[in-house]
Image (cartoon, rainbow, N blue to C red; front, top):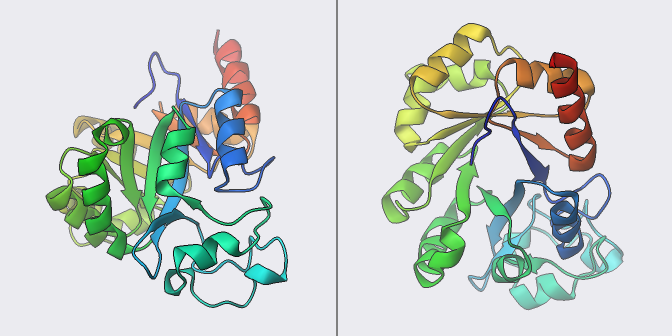
Length: 249
């Protein structure tokens, strides 16, 4: 999904994490009520090979009580253990299937653990309706390369914190795109120039920018003609987008 007429789509980061627990059904529902164009979230694999949603490698930061703390890597826990641990949302982790059944928005699914890829391939083969509203993203270029082979029908976006780190890949950012067969480049704003943007456009790529923490960030992103922006507070991002458009008008 990309912006039209110079208007970037708004992506809710882990739902609407400025106002609701991240990677929670509550956060996804709030993001949809706000009117986001996409929801970004994070997928991992449990010890018993179940797909679930969590950003960090452990439950510690998002723990709601002591039941979720100091339990080690989440990927070494079973789904039952992950669901019984109480997070900030008041419940355990959300499964991938629960999320899809509860949402209707386009999903930007970030691969946090490379071992999820074969299981995602099976899941999307069994749920083509969910595959049709998904883009796979990751910082892990080899996971995206595997996804291109196993799940060719689901598009991919490669993420880097800034253009300098994208350029550090062998062959530069162009080599990174080729390695992953990505159609979207997701970049931090730092160091991005008009020359970079022009070259990205020449390759026919979508450009998604982050973070979106201030009105000035929005002005910069829209000045680059971003197709999308990712925000912790999507409602504020929508207001900023309108303010910039009215200012340009």
